[in-house]
Image (cartoon, rainbow, N blue to C red; front, side, top):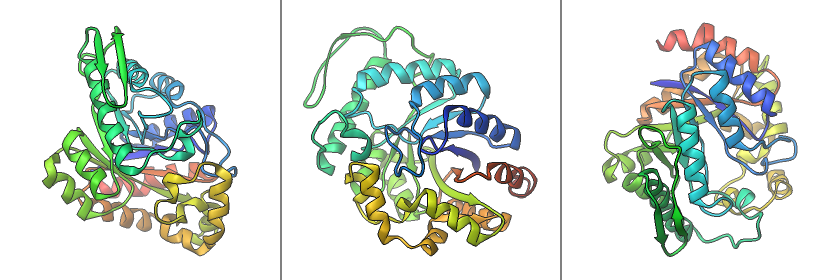
Length: 316
């Protein structure tokens, strides 16, 4: 299994993101995830740099492969523009770039005043957006007049030798079926073997399956849970609220239903290598090929040292 590090754009400044990427490579992580947000989930997280600037900068400070986890190519930015951004990113990273895509959240996508569609429409838009991007990556001028998108006389001149792979995120059956049908890989954040089986049996076959989880490194499990609750109480918000709430203050309101002790279910809290290995094994048993860990709070150096000296050597 490939072990990567998840750069949380919602919590880190641009300088901190680059510093953590360098530290992750030194610690022995094999790849990077980076989130694509316009807003953080809560004001306590406090950041949200533009991911495409960060992906370009990452190419200059480390050699690890990078996956967006995930980009929504449907509402906030037109897929023709994202096709150009992804192509340039793939060139900068010498082919070590993966475009992870998903149907998005209102939190990030409502900002231009567009209506936030229902799930079925969002998935329909996602499928057409991926079609548009792949059409542009083939080179030549593109004219596309679809149900949701129009492209006229557009050509991307700066292209990688091979188009960037598109991995599709999915948490419900319809989204997983779409990922199996159109994706070059699958993205999730849950160690759910049923979803992996659905992806593989629905057409995904042996394509890569990526997943990620969050940690809160601290001197004890309780201290880590307090950090997680301060920064990411939204991790305990249930159901479809994460897709439909429009602003950080709404997530803060919903998070009032979340109790600090619930963070121990959503995060690996504390400094136990065994706890991290147990979580990684849950994803391995579910059938994932790659797993990415994010650290919340100020103690990232401790997490990197834990992985460098205890977690990664025991896995290898």
